[in-house]
Length: 248
Image (cartoon, rainbow, N blue to C red):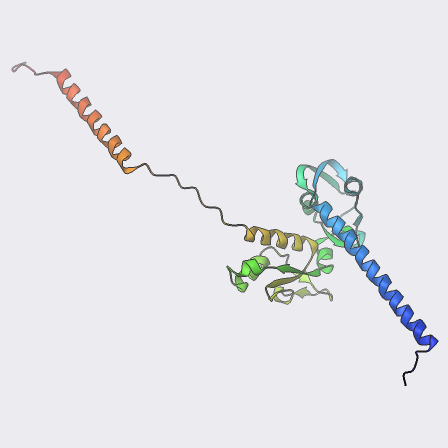
C-alpha cells in the first residue's frame, strides 16, 4: 500500500521546487545581462578624452552604451591606480572592447564581465575572476594537431594565471582539448583574444600575388630589337668618323 506524503513533506517539496524556479530565473536573467554586455563590446564607439579622469570616462561609457560598468576599487588600490587618473585618447570607428583595451592597458588596467556588470579591474583581479568556457575547434583539428593548436592558444594567454587559492596555475591545468572542444579557464580579455585567434585560424589562407613573367615570344622580340638598335648605333658611329687619309 502506497503511503501518501505528509503535509510537511508536501510543503518541503513545494519549497524546493520554488527555489529551483527562482534560481533558474536568476540564471537566465544573469545570462541575458551578460550577453547584452558582450554585444555592446562588439559595437563601434567613439572616445575623445583629454586629461579626463578615469571616473568620468567610466560614467561616459556607461551612459553611451547603456550597460552597467563598475570599478573594482580594491584591485585598483592594489595596482596603485586612482579614480582621478587622467586618460588622454582619441578613438573612432573601433569596437567598445578594443577601445577599452586601448585606454586601460596604458594605465595598467583591464576589464572582466562578472555578476552582470562590466568590471574595470587590474590584471591580477581579472585572473582571479577567471571562468571556464568551451570552444568548438573541430574544423581546426581537421588540418592541425591538437598539440600545435594548444601552443598557438598559449601565445595569447596572460601569464601567470591564478587559481582559486591565488597561486599561479600551469597552463596545462586550465587548457585542454576534449572531443574536438577546446576548454579554457581564463579571464575575459583572455577569452576575447582566444576567440579572435580561433576566428583567424579558420580563415582560408590568402594566395600571395606573383608578378607574371612576360611571354617567351615577347621577351625574344624585345631582345632582338635591343640588339638591332645597338648594331645600328655602332654602324652610324663608324660612318660619322669616315675613312682617314694616310699621312695626316
